[in-house]
Length: 366
Image (tube, rainbow, N blue to C red; front, side, top):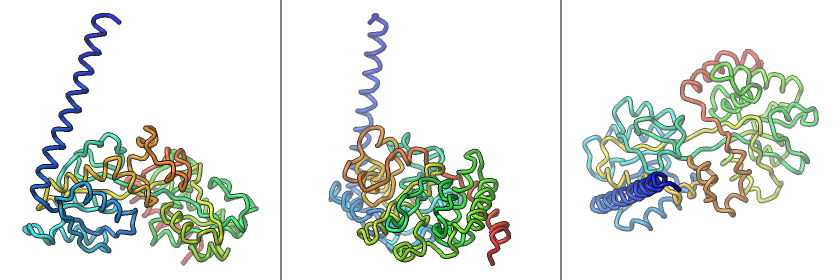
């Protein structure tokens, strides 16, 4: 090693150490400020959704000085936004500090001035396509579209959209409902379009997906019944699509009667994401930031995984060898998620329009 190389290496090491210490100091300051506030108000976090019960308990255990006030666990994303609006001047426990909402609500809340910017320390692990560049909202966990397969009836599970066109899957394939009214169904059709050509997007991808399902219907492989856990168990719809976390929970509930495989299509991996944000009027802004640091930490992210929701930092955690083997054994292989695609809001909007315009016309639906 030359002197210059040695000096460079030493300078780099010092810079890295300084950055580490700076982050540690910043976290210590944030923790102290949050503990001084002594409270955090969350909203719309049902305990059985993505293992939120354990995630909240983990935060309480780590920061017992902070009381977590839980508002309306069964509220929807729209209710969360309205709660911010209704409590702009309220510093009491009815004013939410943080929200967990569907993707489309993040940009809208930013536009309306209802949320504030904050970039967590693990910001770099969050894909650019699911975070606001200025830090106003950011994806936290997601599901991907998968196939639930009744192994008693389907002895050799399909592995792709292409496989489903095989005549051996006659009267076997189902979708959860009508793509004009259900997001998971709309995105299943969208995923089929991408399977035919990964370069497609928006309306083009949706129309290609409609053409795929029109052909699947013509071949009698598509069952004219909505896919559900009951219909899968009874064999009416032995293969059906849904978000992976719903199918994995269904598999566990069925407990082997019948045995069920959960398969991520190898030719198209479409993700649906939920995003986090801090209220612009948060009474406990430091506790809100600390909550974000916790749920985007390794511990918080693995908490989602134990509830079958994939943490947004999944690929980074996988590359670092930090995913617990016992949890991974219950899930489809990690590499199946590595190529997950997060359709943008514009792409989803165009797909929704194409669905409204063309699904009934092509499928002969009412």
